[in-house]
Length: 159
Image 1 (cartoon, helix red, strand yellow):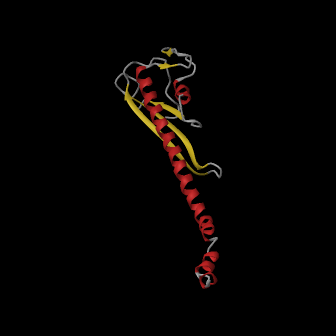
Image 2 (image 1 turned 60 degrees about the vertical axis):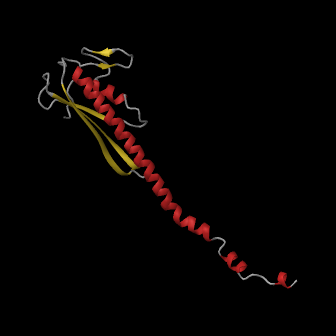
Image 3 (image 1 turned 90 degrees about the vertical axis):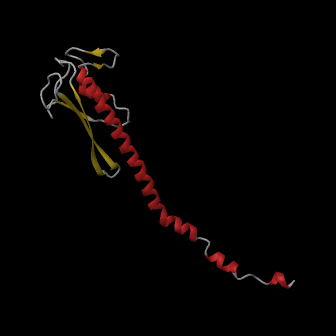
């Protein structure tokens, strides 16, 4: 019976530390949420940039062969196509919320063999709720003209 009467001294100490884990979690959780949110936002920015790079390469290829697909499945090979090449590229974006500005430039003129440059730009906000941390994402592609463009598409005024 003497054993039952003795109370271990560690029992009282354990009762005093009962809420310690909760306090530590409350102190560490904002940093953890900030880290996870930053990783997710960086992944979104990387996804946007990769999609824009694909669009720039695709647009440069369409520009050098002077034809591009239309939404109805036909090919634009003459003037007056709706939408124009810049709009067709912007509509090809697969990332939800990506609205790039497309520009097409001819640094050395638009003769066969000269380069054509396609540039896409868009703003990306890392903290969209507060509107801070905005960066401009850009993608470029340059290829040599293989066929005369004729009137299939026009050079962007913002080159």
